[in-house]
Image 1: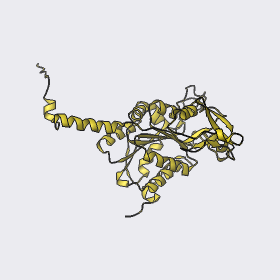
Image 2: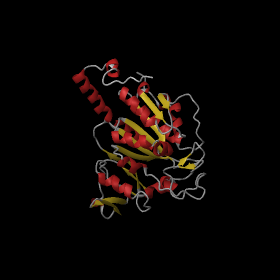
Image 3: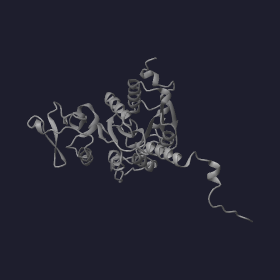
Image 4: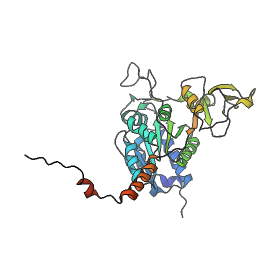
Length: 332
């Protein structure tokens, strides 16, 4: 059998994003991850809504749907329920998922349907030329907020946690190897795996994450979390996070190495602290798999319900269903 490479997952269509867009890095990371996984192309489906990110399925040499605004999770849910054998990925942006598709997003996480959702978060509507989005910071100057946005922004990670997500991860478009690793870990999860990608829009919101993701800044402003590993950051890993009374605090890993916490993505204390300190410049922004739980899945439960019903009542008869029960006749 032929070994698939990254090129095998790329379609022959010209990629039409703006030069320098972070979407290219995400596309590369997904194709590399699938090649590492040797994912069967005929069993892989990418489903998107509307937005720059949602052109993604065209560039994959797999199956794909470019669907309507915000509804990709609903389309993906339908496909999942009839084809449990497929590997389903939802591609969405911050406007698509958190504004127009907000309800679909929270309910697919609540139901824990087996699929992966990659959210390209650039804090702007790029496809429609630069309106502020649900994740834009207060004060964002855009074409619809010339005096600055006054809306409180959504935190995608906070929203996912509050919706009952069982896998929450964050990565960024300036570290392809890290994105690739996160996507592979998401692929292993049985349930809805949600990944937020901090992504730069070079035209309408350039540099929005520079203070965190630029190479010289991420040393101090970012912490890479990994299950079973110490929470260390800084140029020489000289800083650490200690967990005391459910609260994380920054300590010197040189002076107090024994107090540095070991990361456990199944412990709510860690993600709750990362959410709490998301806008704290003195606290590192966490990337990696932030949260992971195992619990029942809607798609499995529904299939079990169908099989139980068939055992009790036999195979369904559509004609009998349509013509059973009370009937009314409307006469002239």
